[in-house]
Amino acid sequence: MNKTLITEDFESKTAQEILKWALEKFKDKVALASSFGAEDVVLIDMILKIAKSSMSNIQPLIFTLDTGRLPQETYDLMDKIKEKYKINIEVYFPDAESVEKMVSQYGFNLFYKSVELRQLCCKVRKVEPLNRALKNLDAWICGLRREQSVTRIDIKKVEVDQAHNGILKINPLADWTEQQLWDYIKENDVPYNELHDKGYPSIGCAPCTRAVKRTEDIRAGRWWWEEPQKKECGLHIRK
Image (cartoon, rainbow, N blue to C red; front, side, top):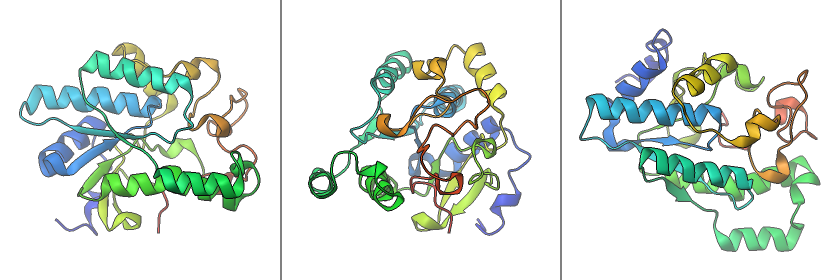
């Protein structure tokens, strides 16, 4: 497969078509990365239905990053998802020694002090565990949407992830709207994070996430003290 041309082949395909292709093409070398936001629970529901209906011998790999600072509501949702779908979710934790060293040197709430320290915290708690999760994969599936922020408006449904050794990064919901997400969740009775009902359209670590006003951007509550163009944790850096 020519990875330089692949981005042009999938833009007209539906999310379900892309997920089916990914499972058939990569089998146990592709995984869904879930932070259990609205996009991720939609993808979990989709990919499990696809696997059940057409690929009985394939169990989709699903993993999450537990930063140690997630809201309780996120942990509650993880249990609901596991119970509803009877699935195993692989969990990656940050290196304990690195966390201890960082907190000892910069404090518990270092992320408020500067962009650099916030990025360091994200690197230790998210980026390094993600690198471990992707180490043996040929592709990974994400819930990124172009509508989410100014840093994501040009993402492709399938693209080469140069930040992770050139594996494929699959964004089946790239062209979905917020309305489409919630229509799917309601129509398919998909469990979702209770914080969404409390004004949290985007949910990350508890200290770095707040509710937003109706007039604000959907990611305005993530690292709200920083400028919009800097609001990425390092998981989705495009080189």
